[in-house]
Length: 253
Image 1 (cartoon, rainbow, N blue to C red):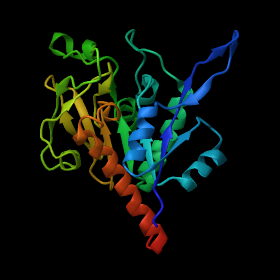
Image 2: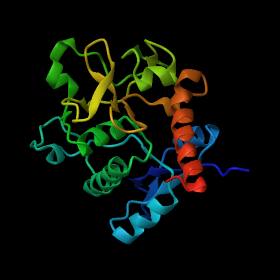
Image 3: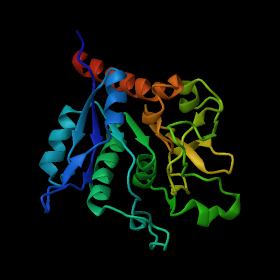
Image 4: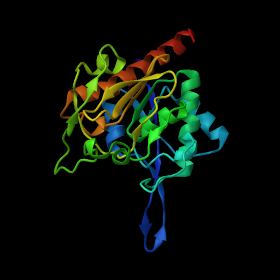
């Protein structure tokens, strides 16, 4: 039986306090792991190590990389000074994820990037971000951080016809959720915008040269159980990783 592809999920620092003592942890939202597992992959949480030999060890076992949501990406990585609207950043997470994303770009490892992950991937490839959508767009901006009593779609996005994202999701205008105040501004060289919100905010990017290098601004890991079109993102990512496993097993790469 063919093994399940191993998908690495980069982690974040999760503050934890017990009896007045700090016991911080590395963690990933359970929803990402469940979505990858349901798609046929084996999710592996990657601690934020900056030791090169540890990162190399990660790489030897991974078939795909998933960059999840989280804090803002520091603007120093795309040549800007921080605006007052910039929220919390984690310099260590930025550094580690940039190393992994750039290696994935160099070696054509399948990448699915979600929310912050899309932003990080765009920066890693040479693009920039809106530090705050509402400052950049003013009153024409949608409310991009929804407030709903349950998890549900918030607005629709227009997908680029013929794009990988359109092919994978099978819909031209899927309904998505929204939990962000930053977004892609200048799309990185070698990438193209493939999803737009009604206010023009870029909600999806993909590489024009890699086999599977896809970023979305929304959170499909929170929607896939009730909205099957969002699970296709995880299924397609895992399938592309599976093809890499098969090629390595046959000795073709």
